[in-house]
Picture 1 (spheres, rainbow, N blue to C red):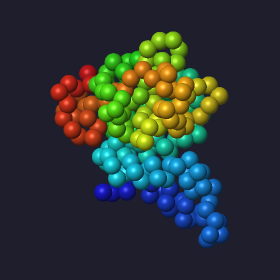
Picture 2: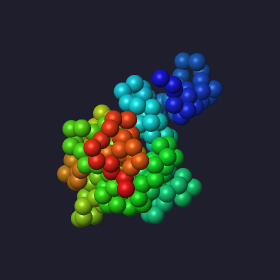
Picture 3: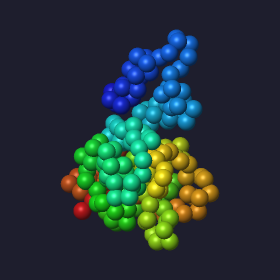
Picture 4: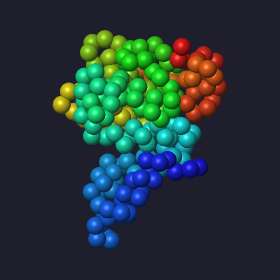
Length: 191
């Protein structure tokens, strides 16, 4: 399995920017403290290249500020703009712009079936599918949460998110009926 470009860049950056040989640099320390290095390794080993690339690419946007209506690193991201940008940049699939539209255009799955790259939806505005994130594995997801915040990783097990969980969805290619991981589906999600 090839090493995703983002992970290669991180490894190169960690070796180039290392302080004293025995002290980790800030990036390595941050990724290690957040448990993201082990998550990236787990993702790389357990899912297809596309799903792995999607998750690793999304992790590269940690810290980008939230911006209502934003859909790029330059403007910042809102939740659905972040998901749309990650899928378009990494997988080449164009998702609808709004969270509820993304839910309608994807295949419903059970929470127990979640795999990295799947979408997780929440009711945060007293309406169904008002927030969306990308599942990265190990009960965690990455998203652009709210004004004043930044793209970050959170646990589905946290009371706030668990209480507002609205469902899980899998993105499929309308042309092939294949999921992100390559397994055929009976019903394509994107129309």
